[in-house]
Length: 84
Image (cartoon, rainbow, N blue to C red):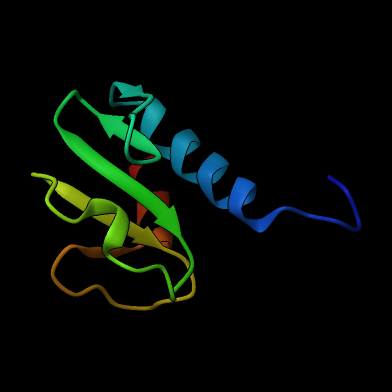
């Protein structure tokens, strides 16, 4: 809602949460941004976000902004808009 000083990380995470909370159980995760249905870990970020934060975690994915197509465990953030 602000014209300036927008925290893009917060905008991305709010979008992700908003899209999934309607149909899935979304909760806090210790190592990632979100835990979905007590099984899937998601880290939300920009296109340059690395795999470092999810390395070694089972069922872990990156929801990335500013990419058009996904690869392996990297999913474009915009695709989550179709869940709502």
